[in-house]
Length: 277
Ligand SMILES: [Ca+2]
Ligand SMILES: [Ca+2]
Ligand SMILES: [Ca+2]
Ligand SMILES: [Ca+2]
Image 1 (cartoon, helix red, strand yellow):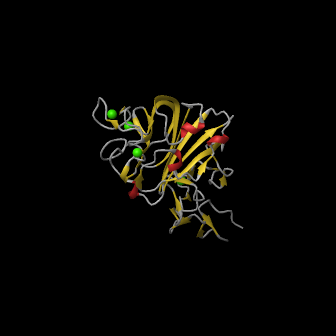
Image 2: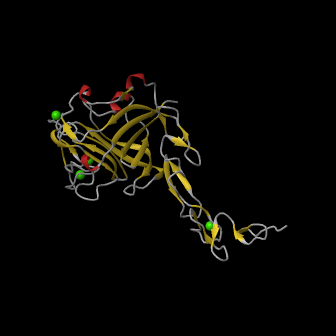
Image 3: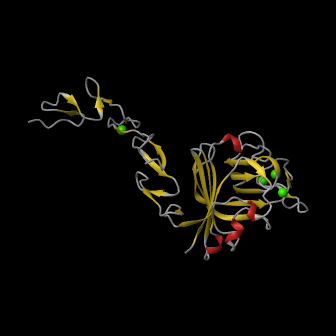
C-alpha cells in the first residue's frame, strides 16, 4: 500500500492526482491553476465559483470571491434578506429604478418610474448608499448622511445638494473605478437644475448650479477625492438620452455630462439604501 506524494494517486502512485497533469504530474489539470508558482494547483476562477454573485480573482494562487453588495460568504452563496444589502446586509433599499435610455423630463417625483419607493417608511439612519448597476459592472458607494430626510436621497426634485460628504467607501466591480476601503472625503452634486462647468472648465466634481433654472438638466453625482464615482444625469431634460457612469468618463467630461450614453448598456439600475441603527 502506497502513500502517494501529493501530486500523485493510484495503487502504485503512477497516475496524477485530480488537480495535476503531465508525465511527472507537475502541471495543473484543466480547471486548476498555480498562479503563485508554489507547485500546488488549486481551482481556478470559473463561472460558478462566486455563485454568480461576485467577482473572482485567482491571481494570488487561490480563487477568492468579492461578493456583490447583496450577498455574503466565501462563495457569495448567501443572499442578503430581500431588500437588504451592504457588507453586513444592514442597509435597506428605499429607492429602486430601472433606468430608461431617453431623457423624458422628470420634473416631479411622480415622473420618476421607481419600482421601489419606500422613503416614507424610513426611520432615522446613520449611513446612506448609492448603487449603480450597468450590465456586468456595478458600484456601491456609501457615506455618512448629508440629509436626515430619506425622501431627499432620491432624485432631487425640489431640493439641491452641493455639499461635502464624509467617510465615503466604495465597493467597485468595474475596471474603471477602484474599490476604496479607507473612509475618504467626497462630495455630492444633486440637483434638477442646469449647471455650468465652473472654474476648471470641465464638468466634474466641482460645477456651478444655475439657480434660476430648476427642472432643467439634473444630476446625481457622488465624487471621492475630486473624482466622479457614480454619475446619473440629464433626467430633467426634454429629449436626448440619459447619462450614466461608474468612475470618471474615459472620454469627454469626467462626470459624463453631455455623453448621452445610456444606450451603451443593456441593463441599467440605480438603487438607494439607508442603514437604520
Ligand atoms: Ca499554487
Ligand atoms: Ca467643473
Ligand atoms: Ca458635476
Ligand atoms: Ca425639465
